[in-house]
Image 1 (cartoon, rainbow over the protein chains, first blue to last red):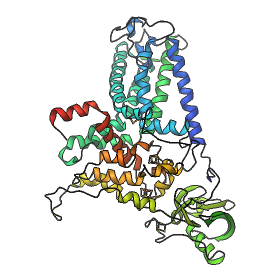
Image 2: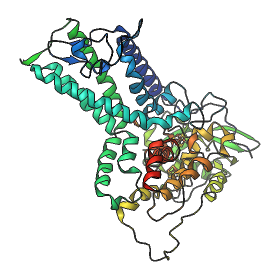
Image 3: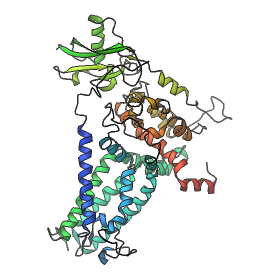
Image 4: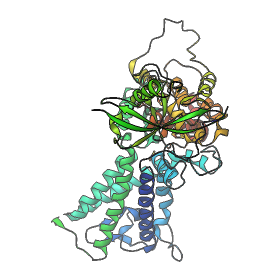
Length: 254
Length: 249
Ligand code: SF4
Ligand code: SF4
Ligand code: FES
Ligand code: FES
């Protein structure tokens, strides 16, 4: 038996193409900004107020400004156009790329698989995440572990910056790590590890409680993914503007 | 407050068909199914449509309205402009029988392929005891009315007929999750989900959750947790080592 003969790719009359387009443009702009700042290799540290942009933290190579290397300089200077963040970006990028939310976002927006619900995808064949390379999405939890570690370092940086008084930069760094923490905690792998994998919640009251709380955050995972991503860029921009002397930090207490 | 609404309804069977134009009276408070019934009563007595409860509970009246999969009986006419032409088509993913009626037996085949609930051998019926917190997750999935809108919308089979063999679809992966999370089920559901029901085909793009009339969080609460369990089993050496060392199962 055959399907109903309907030639149109979709009969949807709403602007179904708008959300994937918005996602695509949003991700593209953020990628361009992040790539630019990564390869700029400068303006990541405000010596006077100890502000370090999260994009360069931890700064682990010998070309880093020594004061910005809170955890020492483990590696020699990188050759050519390579910059210190390239050591941590694979983990941060890996975390976001394998994130269940971002997967939905770019499968739809960049790969049109599908572009929107009930809109036919343009591909002839589809195997989803059953084989290489997409089967590697299953590694998400390792990136979650790595990103959690980097988050702790960012929190350390933000706390350290309070040693010089209080300025707008401190508030921004604080909001940034809060958003990053909320995004990381709301991760589906985190939810699973905390308690989701249990069969009997009643036997593990503490993990059940943790699972319940994380589930609430997890409901907002998409919003947190965007909020934290945009805010990391804004934080970095603020640090860059202060570090380059373009603006001066708004100080409350010195 | 009634008006003459413009409709385009797909008519035909598996030998072919087309959209046909109709003008039908629309009254205040009506749903799309009311219009289809009026159309049947006044202009097209042989129009085929499947329905039962008219209350969004039997899951019979699934179709596509302006290209969006939904229940005919739960789609209010008030969400449309009076001037709008409303297109009503059968579900795309299943073979057509006639007009708005499709053959959904793919779903029953997939349902039968899932080994049934397997309580511990030493537990007699009537002796089942479980706590509310332990069954809550499975209970969300029991809200399913089997309308198969999620199955119809999932691009894995909607756009790729050839995947029907390997992929059971969101509704039945959710059934596997329901059993996996059931406190008294003893069967191994994780390998089943990945190997027998094609969990890996799902790319978590969430269209199933988007169209579910029961608002079940299919992707977040069933599919992703199953993917995480598969990752535990197949792709996580740390868990594997922990299980070996502490003899957990
Ligand atoms: S989330 Fe998975 S199962 Fe649901 S519609 Fe998308 S691909 Fe299909
Ligand atoms: S999960 Fe929702 S969309 Fe799918 S069959 Fe059940 S009620 Fe329908
Ligand atoms: S699911 Fe998004 S970060 Fe893990
Ligand atoms: S007629 Fe029962 S769900 Fe619509």
